[in-house]
Length: 227
Length: 227
Image (cartoon, rainbow over all chains, first blue to last red):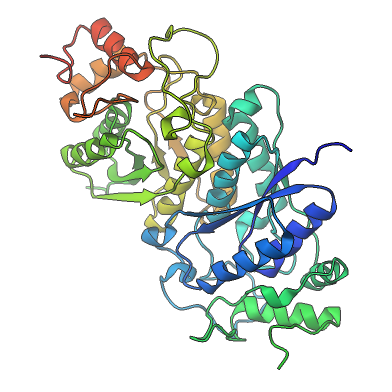
């Protein structure tokens, strides 16, 4: 039996990264999960990341701190309020955009992948049912792959890094259908940008509403909000 | 008088980043200095970064933590010994290479630059008298600029980020001459990868020896090693 290829998977605790990781695992990757505490106000996301990593039976789960909150610029790190009840298909980039977040996350994944000998970085970005963030687009992902190869000793020596984005062309409903077919328990995940004190989702932020619409379209019950 | 343009400058505490920052300041930039504690074993570098930031009279100095030591793969973060007495012009990438370090540093600089409204990222990389690191080459820097524009809200809205590398084509002697002409006190800096307990340089690592050769070629006395 060939040795499984290792992949570094960015695991936030949300349903997209859970599903992306599960797809990579189903395709044969040995998962090394990376969770970054970047100063997100919704820290119960980090508890969800631990639950999800256990459920995925990852080889290892590394949590590291890289404090983007100090830099400001995002409602997700405490600069201003998380928007509520916003039209989901409104053009423009909302206040929950975190400057350069995916670049920081992918850089850290690359910093771990190279010494691990992993060549695949897995990220659950999605360019359809998403919030208009620029660092979720295919052209951004391709530019990062090119950079990763130029940036590293492994790249100089001929390796090619790939950023795997299994969800990039899926709707939220497609993602939920795919994860459900893989047997994922979405009750382990956390999506809300602005949870109540008891950790329950607010139901009004973009992330809650994209999730609710996705479950509804997929015809699946969300275990998180089922009473 | 036009408002000064802001620049985020990566400040390590070494002489290259000090000089790069001083060149950017001399060209009119308002400096926002960023120092990243990435797990370097030579923590006196961080003290040097604070001294250098004061000497440069920066607008602000932000220190953030992003722990690459947890990921392994470099003598600079504790995985194996720092090489000593290595031929300086030997081909290949030495054990002091830190996987994806400049990508992580530039990503964090970008994460700060965007909300600041800065469009210039300043980094003291050098492709001549350097240690063969892949992420110091011009083609790498160009790839990062392209990525930065695709990655950000500002980029989508038409801004162009520039990575300024004033030292990229200079020898170490050129850098020291330039800094000396700008009146920099290199006694504030720290270069050694493996300092003694009292903080004095080892004189045998690549960084000490490139520094010594640079000062000798420039015909300048290094205040750090002058008895």
